[in-house]
Image 1 (spheres, helix red, strand yellow):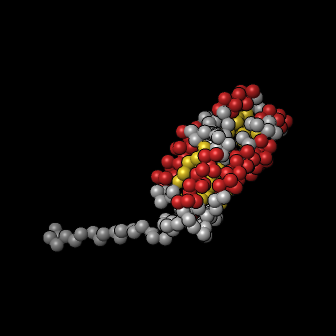
Image 2 (cartoon, rainbow, N blue to C red):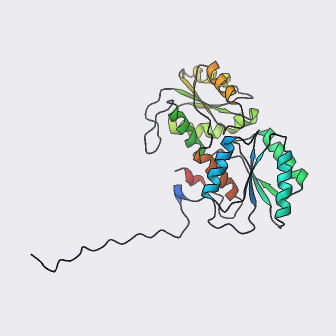
Amino acid sequence: MNEGHEEPPKLPIRERSSRPGTGRHRRPLPANLPPDAPALVLAVPGKAEEVAAEVAAIVRLDNPQIDLRLVSLGDGGADLTQEFTTIAAERPSDGPAAVVVPLVTGPHPRVLRAVRDAVRQSEAAVKITEPLGPHPLLAEALHVRLSEAGLARADRMRLFNVTSPVDGIIVATAGGDEAARGADATAVLLAARLTLPVVPAALDGVPTVRDAAERLRKIGANRLAMVPYVIGPETDQERITAAAEAIGAGCAAALGAHEAVARMVCVRYGATFGGFEDFDDLAE
């Protein structure tokens, strides 16, 4: 009827913002690191096995600008000392030549002692970061591992608990008594997500996993699950399995190369740059 048919108006195209991201999608590192940015050294307890290599691969994929070195502490730290010495020779600078991120979720005296000894012996300018946890991102990752094992139910969008097949959770650490104490905050974060009692325990210290199970049973929690608050190289998988079986608890997988682990590596490294210290909003 109308020969002069008009085209409908086109919707405006939304351009990608040039500002740094915020909230959950905020980058934990500057988009462009300075040319003399320190190397990122991942210090791995034991052997630099497949899990550690996967974590490093994720970090490199998301942040190709980082000079990342993966170093094992399996030899008592000799390789780490040599790596620091090499980096210092390659990067003569007034600032730190390297930032070393221990690949552990919490306090681990043996690992931290080996890193400090390596720094001292190399005489290189090196910054040592905090462990990866505690952080809400890691509590979320523990929830994911529990739900993957059928030990916690979660909705598809936010991973909030709906109903649970268990009524008590043990967060099992490696690193002795200090590691168990350091997991208190993570236990609280996980309990808030699951609305269940959650207590920490040490696979190699006190309170033991059995101590934690008795504590939960005293408050009426009898269907127990254990989730290893470890990445993998810190302890032997057989020890984790045996600890869960000894108390009749279901057991989730270790954190492994979960995205949250790689992201926290970047968070710890990024905190050495001005303006990239506060990442609490990454979890929500």
